[in-house]
Length: 331
Ligand code: SAH
Image 1 (cartoon, rainbow, N blue to C red):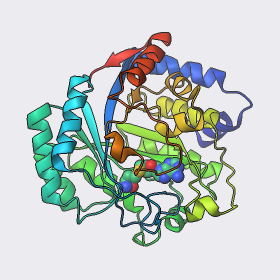
Image 2 (spheres, rainbow, N blue to C red; image 1 turned 135 degrees about the vertical axis):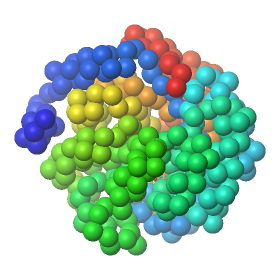
Image 3 (tube, rainbow, N blue to C red; image 1 turned 90 degrees about the vertical axis):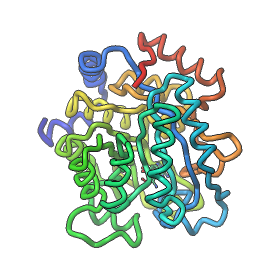
């Protein structure tokens, strides 16, 4: 697909034909299955100061917590009980807490005790760390590059290395070579982001041959520098625009796993997940973080999530699948 074609899909008055084509391709490559991945938010302690994220180090109003290893393994056991197949271990960035050895041991325990596949989402880490975790049995790594626009990336990630290559794209390439399935993605509507850069983001997903692409609208957190600024973006923060990006990603990478994200459901609590699942997405990530920790993990306010242990929440999700002719698929 050319740059011009992508830009015109993103800006056309309506996108019904694009969504229909994405559904057709999704059906051809993925059938009617939806993968459920159990999200475990290991900790809200973070050494970084990303300008958009509520968990940033300098926000004093975050309830900081860190889960114990036994609690994490218990969440993975719950994912197995619910036939999910995969858990995603995500955390604020803190190497003191999540050392190479501790994560390696956690991976071995989760594999041995629950049989779940493991996706790591622990931010920017060294080649040695990700190699050790692969050797311990990790399957996938999720690291959004957030934007291909280097000056925007540098501005919203203070202290980011001034390397020639985008540090997160460099890490994704290293991990692909190490044998990981790699997932990435961007936020849509970051102040200062341009439509041209979103076109570049989409083309970069294809260039990197991503196995998984996570895309969500940027949501203002009032206790962050970006949340307090009046700067706007020419990229709309809307469910429609987010879904156009799901659909284009599906056409560019027909086999990719594409989640209908929590950020999309937070922006449009009523219709978000239906819109996501009918514009090319085939993955959903229910939250398995224990209730007494969950409110500490506020990357943006009002995070709406399917809370997996709560049967009513999961039943409602499965009812949505049913209405759309989809069903849970283990993997
Ligand atoms: N520390 C890990 C996990 C971060 S949270 C890492 O950096 O990889 C996971 C994702 O949430 C981020 O990659 C970012 O794309 C998204 N996110 C963070 N703050 C957000 C906000 N205010 N609005 C929307 N998405 C946000």
